[in-house]
Image (cartoon, rainbow, N blue to C red):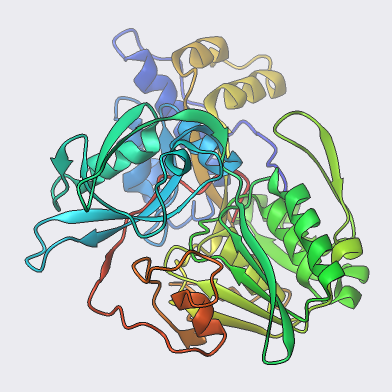
Length: 453
């Protein structure tokens, strides 16, 4: 999905003196963006009609969302949201799940899923399966776990009390959380497999993915195991590039349709589009470098794609699965995916006010005052629904069911990429551990990202 053109929609009048400027401009911004770009703007027409500039704009956006929309959000500071997509930001380099810590379900523990290379968590020797019982000296309960667990994403410093008595203090650092994690090739039952644990569709991942698939091609892999169990999404652009490294070569050469994007009726005539497989992708890295990847040169020509999935597999991950299924054999192993069947854009308030001023120089709206009042505000708004080449959206309305059911188990004692690890062994048809007695508590990380599915 390409970048949306920022258009000025219906303007509200200049604020009366008694109106709080932040409230006025945040509501003006949010109302106009929702009235123009929101995928379900017609379905929520009554909520939009009753918008008031004196309201709490953040709460108003949430209350105005369509019933199927869990993602559209107005941020007073969108930088953390943006970092979650680019992979660049203050971080402990840690991913975790939440579990009940006792049979009475009064206490909650955070369990490490994996750590990022050279991050504070890895340097502190945290590893998959480590159990965090306290955060800054406090035990987690159903009443406080969201706030305490949220500290693991906020940066700064945090002290963790681990099962077994060890205490670890982590200081966040500015880092790139490289989503290209474990990579290996192996033989099983006479076939050569490639395995990739991939955690997010960042733009910077494109070049790393090209290098991984070049190695896969040189190794002559026949089947690919793509581990997306912890992948919450990212850039649609990266998903298309990765799909072009996986799909049959003749599909890529012919530049067939990977995904279709459907917008609201106001924008549809101009923006409804098709995303095509391609043999070349160019982009600008986070460091400002012009980069090019050529998927067809590294496409190993796999005969079968296995995808490890869970309830945390979302957005661009689901779009990847959806777009590839019409062209090749794809088997999902794990649990039903999250069910984010739509794409969105992050629109900074400052950019919107600039667009209004540029497109309508005689506007009565004081755009400079709006920028000054909302320097870090941004609205992540759902703008489109994705579908495959046949117009089918597999993840709508509640996720893509797994073909082979298996439950992720970070307690099994094996690192990701170990053949005996629960989910990888499920792919290979080995005996799976029974973890039905350790139900996971859903913890929704803030946001899915910019220009993504």
